[in-house]
Image (cartoon, rainbow, N blue to C red; front, side, top):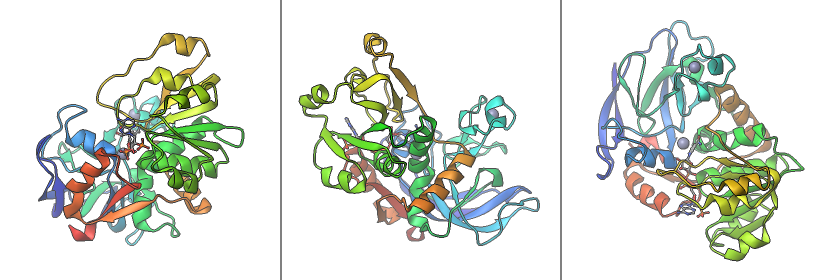
Length: 346
Ligand code: NAP
Ligand code: ZN
Ligand code: ZN
């Protein structure tokens, strides 16, 4: 076992504080990662603030992890010390169910083991990436291509894959009229990835404050959802809408923006349920779906795609003692567009 510095939430209301945690000694198939950067995902905040149920405090958030391999177990075949690697939300899965066997471990029927706020096979709590190091099975580690800087690679491990997977599943391409709701960490990756795949991208943001950014990042159109005209003007305009908003929205208004047969995919996971007007689905044979991160193989594919197409997130690099302020700014939608913690400051 080794001891590493970390930042942990100790209750739903207290600020995160610096602490130390222990990491297991690597087993035969484990990789030890020296964490260099960790992104701040809104899911970290939902969990820390007990919005998705009571977490196991103290809880170290962080599932957008980029670092360097320092040690490998005796049976590890895919990685060697010095490799640049990433770890996202999925640290383990049952490996036996039909989802796992189909390479869709994000939909493991026994429940995937998140990197954060879960119990590992050794019976110990899994602690996340706001820490100096982590030990994980090599099957859940991905390789970060050399052309991607580690700080900018970190947010790809959750925000990147969470947008890449539905864009691929719903075959976003040149004929796709795509709308992204919410220009935050996830949303801005949706704009960049959607544009790189050739889709015509529209941003639906609360205001026009970030319009210049949205257009620079690859959107062709940008509308404020605070303006009721947006919902009349854009009625029936989209094939695919990806909702990245962390709060409840009047989904019926947005479903009406889909053309006949269009699909709205729920990516944001707000604390409370949302209402769906059945008539809005029925009258346009519309689909309401959802999507959760992406598989390990797809995460590797996404990283390679980002390297090839020069797609990286817009980040604000912060020191560890700024985490609580960063949380407040994410909650105020004041992030352009992902906070990334420089772990050397821990
Ligand atoms: P974020 O950076 O905070 O972005 C969310 C954006 O939603 C904000 O920037 C804002 O965009 C908009 N928004 C926030 N509050 C709103 C409100 N009350 N009404 C309307 N719009 C609002 O968060 P994120 O890290 O991208 O995560 C977004 C959500 O996705 C979270 O719920 C998170 O837990 C979830 N998530 C899901 C998965 C998955 O696998 N499905 C993976 C990661 C995260 P504008 O300022 O442009 O309006
Ligand atoms: Zn996340
Ligand atoms: Zn499984």
